[in-house]
Length: 71
Ligand SMILES: [Zn+2]
Image (cartoon, rainbow, N blue to C red; front, side, top):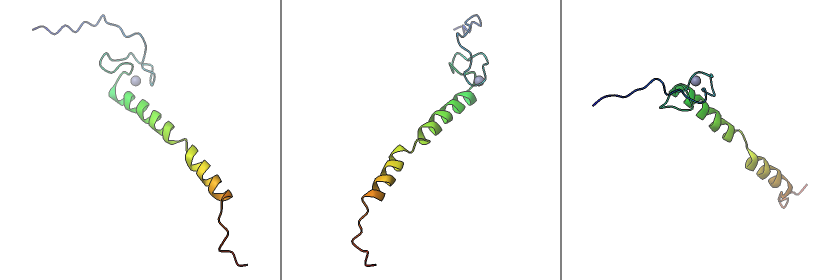
């Protein structure tokens, strides 16, 4: 069996992280490290949106039960 690894297969887009030529295996990234960086960015972007927490906090403040207030 022959390993047909033709270098003429140029990537269409460069790595979105460092703009280096992307690897065929790791498209569109040039390395696993860059793919990891992108994944981390994505994850931190998702976790950086505390919409539910903010809403819940605001609502809880409005519907505050004041039955235990004797003053
Ligand atoms: Zn890269």
